[in-house]
Amino acid sequence: MLKNVNPDLKISKHDYNEEIDSLKLRLGELQRELRNSKIPVIIVFEGWDAAGIAKVCNKVIRSFDPRGYTLYHIGDPGTAEKSMPLFWRFWKRIPSKGNIVIFDRSWYSRILHEDIRISRKCRVSINYSGIFERQLYDDGYLIIKLFLHISKHEQKKRFKNPDDDPCLKYYIKNTDWNPNDDYDKYYPYIDDILNETDYDFAPWNIIESDDPNFAVIKTYRLLIKYAEDFLSARKTSDSQFARLKYIPAPERFTLPDAEPDNPLNRDDYLKLKKKHGKEIQKLQAELYKKRIPLILLFEGWDASGKGGAIVRFTEYLNPRGYRIIPISAPSDAELKYNYLWRFYKELPIPGMIRIFDRSWYGRVLVERVEELCSDYEWQRAYHEINELEEQLLEWGAVVIKFWMHIDKDEQLRRFRERQNNPYKQWKITEEDWRNRSKWDKYELAVSDMVRLTSTEKCPWNIVLGNNKYNARIQTLSTIENEIKSKIQEIKNES
Image 1 (tube, rainbow, N blue to C red):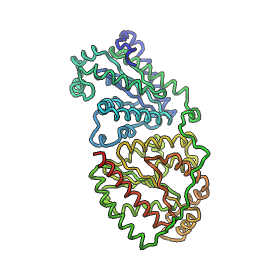
Image 2 (cartoon, rainbow, N blue to C red; image 1 turned 120 degrees about the vertical axis):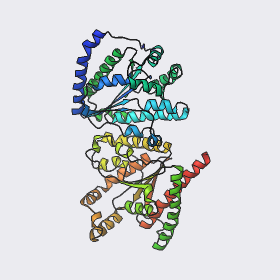
Image 3 (spheres, rainbow, N blue to C red; image 1 turned 180 degrees about the horizontal axis):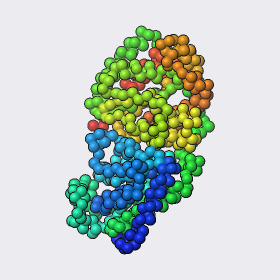
Image 4 (cartoon, rainbow, N blue to C red; image 1 turned 60 degrees about the vertical axis):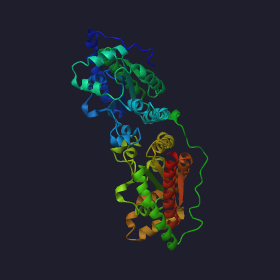
């Protein structure tokens, strides 16, 4: 991609002055149009060290209302960021609808600096960059990627004479990514990454940057063109259906009978609970020592025993090592972001436990059935969820998914019990009864969910919940076995 670009293109000072003011005005107008259209924008600035990224960014943001954009400089990850998935810190920084985020350096610099020496890790990270950008594009984000290209001769000149900017002088002396005299070493790596990540939904734009004024003008022109094209296209969800990876097929997954073959009595249940509880206490310490994150997802019918199973599991844990995340309908603030954003924020640091009482699967369950999102949104979510869980597993997390399953008669019995028990009446709401009236629609949604997101490495565990004792023991034993399996896997690799 870089071979056919001449970085030495120039613009006269006169032509620059003639054009810059009108470009500033137009870009400011477009920011307001994007905001009114609730289109989130991500602008990625990459380039050689000393290519002038900071200067170009500074020129561009002069056109923006500061209330509508945020600029992030991405350098070495901090201690917490190093321990998390690569895209965790970028998911946390995506813009809300109508706002702009500018990345001065991005995931690409981090891939180049951190992963280039490890071929497999680099390949995985490049693949995840495509997933990250495609998921956001599919959700209506405008992504503009700019690479500031300078010649080797120009870079050497700037390293030698970093003008009168003391910040630039310090940065050049302390860069971690492309130190002086490494231009030839990095050139093929950069060119390969640019070629491989030049996606149709987020292509690269090379900015010839030997002449700083030319770089500024071209950047303005490109930003204006992308914004105008995106606004005029008005990409609706229906127009993007061709991008779907998995559209639910007519076949069904049939949920099993919710009645266990050998229902436990109370005495046997208490013995087994204590046995598994002691093991789980030890395993929590092992998770902490080995810095293994544990993520538990509890989904299920209303009154299926999610809360009871969580209480019996956490009974044996040190409270400093876990958090329960109850998931309800997204708030107005959360609706301004991609639906996965609020879950990335809640991921545990290595060694800690996160328990999701309902989860990202709400997109393909309640949001689908209650028509809280478009068909396009929930249909593409199966693939997006599989991609998310694949990245969590690659990171080293243990991810365990439970569907707490009861039959319709058992649910009715529990609803009536809650209604008649003054200590449990708070558990039953009108919404529960309304959801029950849509049992068949939810059953179809559950069938599609299990069939399309139960993968070899991250399967669904269907908990037979008509008997609460069996359900609780099944969840405890599954958690115990999965943690032990992960610890053994780590031992085998070492």
